[in-house]
Length: 72
Image (cartoon, rainbow, N blue to C red; front, side, top):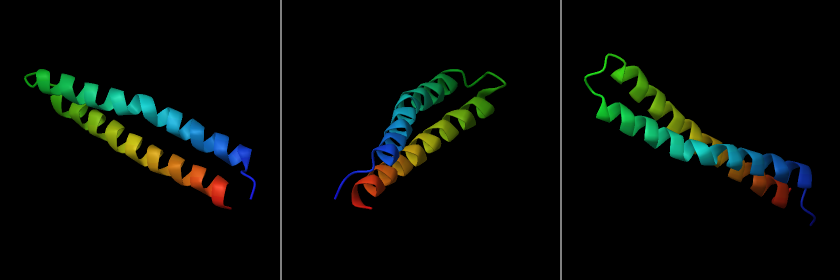
């Protein structure tokens, strides 16, 4: 059963896109907690949470795509 390299590369690109978000999201959340008296505290915290959730979703979709390339 050969692996579809085109689909595999798409999955690896998604995993590669999720990797920086796994670092950027917590850094943004940490910086927002350090500046709680700033008026943009809530929007920056929301942005950090959204980045973390997007990283998790992108990682799951990337893994599913890689598995699809190997199994189908």
